[in-house]
Length: 82
Image (cartoon, rainbow, N blue to C red; front, side, top):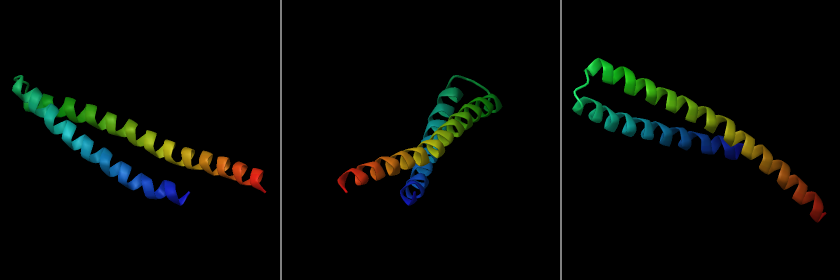
């Protein structure tokens, strides 16, 4: 399970960088279309936050689940060789 803990940190960091890049570019598009600054901030940040939250839940659930399944599969394969 240590592998799962070592992988989750970089995945969350990449998720944060994607959130910043997406929010910045989408904000520019919204502002170029003559939307108000407050409307742009509310919509872009709201959508970005929801996207980041769902992605973080996916990472937090997928990494331990995959590590656990790999451990179970590894134990089964090790028992067959004995």
